[in-house]
Image (cartoon, rainbow, N blue to C red; front, side, top):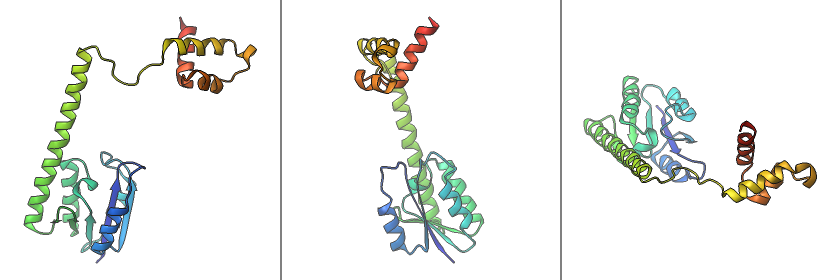
Length: 189
């Protein structure tokens, strides 16, 4: 009967050390780790961990939100593990899914996490809509017209000035992709 751990962070800049340390302290025989968004249900290391588990094993995760981002996905994993005779444990929340109290806490915390995520998404959408109605620009700011025009002039005179597109981008501060896009617009006009 193995104790298998799973640690996850969302981006390459984040650190897995704390989770790995806590999983080791818990007594995990093997720890699967990855840097991948929780919104992605098809995470490679998670799938490998779930496939590795056998009846009687314990699957340990540091925090509830490290396993999944939606209550639906959390419940799906928990139900599959329970059906296979595998215990699910969350260290930080002190949830042991093998007990009735653990299952209750799991569902309550998962529901709160889903609710919080939905509220954040709603507020973000409302903020974008309000900004749109106020005529505010959403997304990345465009390059100053003067810089784009200068870049296009340099591009048009490349034979005389000998500048590459990379050199033009560095000189003007206009990204290569923007230079190409603007040049394409001029050709189509």
